[in-house]
Length: 184
Image (tube, rainbow, N blue to C red; front, side, top):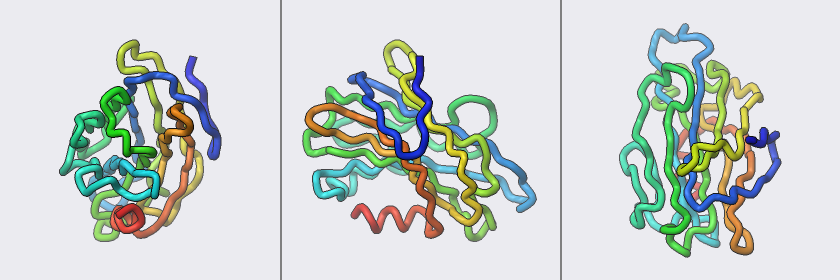
């Protein structure tokens, strides 16, 4: 049975291979333009910086150098039920230098399209066992991010040999570029 997390809660993952599923719906398309939300992952070392540029996983770089993290690709609409984007993670292959994986969702071209997360609803991140499809945990964002164009959904981190997930739910206005500048 999956554990439903609240902001700030942490939980052990206890699965060497798992999938991160991200989903969302659009409140209102009054901007007249389609929404394109993008999931990105930052594979960080002990210093909380990218191991290398190739450890930034997003729609233009779908897999890590060790092939331990593989992004399903960009869903341009978010239509339909369930996960809109998925990322498979295999901890048995992950570079030992990776100590944290930060999961961020941004709105592509948000400023030009006059879009923000206040127009998005039913946002969630979930982690499920890749082999059994059993859901391990889920975090539903219930905050109102009325001006934010990027949200850190959560982070997966290694402490004392155990991989855990922390529900973060932290939004900011400067989009993906801000996260890139933080983690480079």
